[in-house]
Amino acid sequence: MKELLNQMKNQKIEKKPTFWTWLHRNRIKVAVLAFVILVPLALIVTAYVGSYTANRKVGFDNEITSETEMIKGFLEPDGIDAFSLNIVWTELKNPELDPDTENLFGGYYKFSIDYVPNENFIVKTVTVIPVLQTDWKNLRSVGTPTAITTIARPVTLVFNHELPFNPLPFVKVSEPHLYLMVEYVLTTGGQDVEFTEYVRFSLKDLNPINVVS
Image 1 (spheres, rainbow, N blue to C red):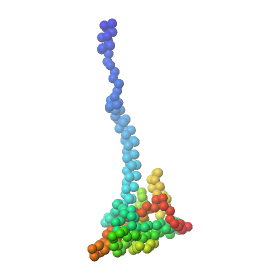
Image 2 (image 1 turned 30 degrees about the vertical axis):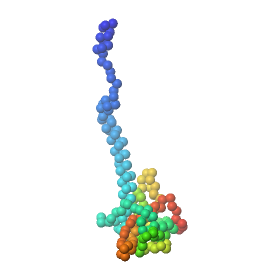
Image 3 (image 1 turned 180 degrees about the vertical axis):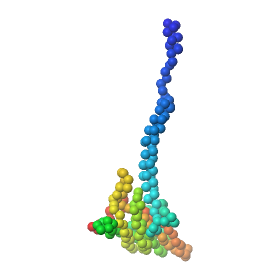
């Protein structure tokens, strides 16, 4: 019996491998597996995030250059202190394909815009520069500066791009957004003071009053 006990003491006790022991033994396999999975995943995330964030910035110049100021912060139509904007999507005409040139033509978006001055503000003039631009991909159109009043004025933008489209898997873009550079003059203390604000009007889940076939 004594000999048996001594043999049992002398026997090596096998320890169960821990996670860190297993990781150390299989470190090369783990590194290869992580590279195969994580690198493509990181590239996909970068593509989605980069595409989304890049096209949330808007320039109001006809041609985007290195000197164009890109705006990324926008107010709601009722977010300006001096007045609220009323915007109605009145008409849509989808572009047609010219069989000779294979270019799209004849498409436009039309809006009706006016403003309602808020109490204690004297609004002298309001001018908007409209831009239609999509998320995810830079499809854009710049309209002409339009003076608006308390009576609705039509604002039309040519938009010869085919919608909806799928810029990335699982991403669908059905409509652009309407962005406005709003330049206005207030009379305060007997002086005219100029201001500039930027407004975003989303067309998501909206329908125009009229669709021109």
